[in-house]
Length: 388
Ligand SMILES: *[C@@H]1O[C@H](CO)[C@@H](O)[C@H](O)[C@H]1NC(C)=O
Image (tube, rainbow, N blue to C red):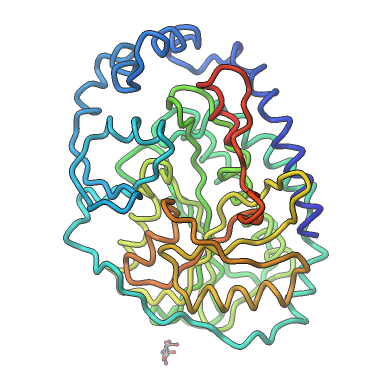
């Protein structure tokens, strides 16, 4: 199942770049024709200078101070919004701590909720409802947006479209499901989305919440005004958890011990902005989060490499990683591995830094170089387009 899924997604991924290149010329939503952007990029090596040349009014915003944790082991330090463009071009991840510096108990990890794996019969009943066709169709539309940048028009439109897809699923839900969905606003245009299965009985905010998440935004790492189909990062995770959500609705799922939530976070590529907002809010409200599973980049398989589920060790909850490892072993027949993934900022870190237990799964076998290798598509600045 997993393998077929991955192969399907990979074929989509392979076709997306070509499709998107074709789309460049006809994109009407850009403020600038792409030729103007390319001209600015050839004039200025610095992405900030290029952006200011294209949008003089963005100069103040790009100069705004941001408290960034650069994922190269250095201390959290004040940089600027423009520096984020420079870091992304260097493929260096970061977490944006602006306005959060005093709130976080860093390094604290709560004990995860790790019930005995004992629902095999119920879980296996859901499997026949999972459809790779649904995922493929979803990704065709989701990746056709010019980009899903957290500040762009298409970034908002793609997020609204995802929200509508979730509403469609909920409209068809059997009455055994107690479902709710909300859009979470941030200080930027794109919203995060939370869909929730609530247990029967009166609402009880002391119950343990389980969260499965992915990020809904994408970015062209060379320059944010260029296109970013984001099929793998993280259209794949978005489609994966949406299909899991849809299948659970279809079987009329009703959790017993506490709410089960599906989160689609905005602005991940700008320093985990969406997940940090949500984690901070849950902490401020004293919610009891038992575990967070983040699903990011799950479609790519290198030719001749072995499909595997990779659990990220950096910034993740060790005990929960072991539990998810055992859980995956119970249900899938591909490898389940650990990888350090030093130097990456992933949404699970937003939760562990707020004292919650969280882990991330990604594609491939790191030992075999199984992650998306950014295939080149011509000019160097479009190489990152394909990191998608
Ligand atoms: C609410 O949930 C907590 C944690 O599961 C439980 O201890 C408590 O008894 C529940 N309260 C009510 C009123 O059901």
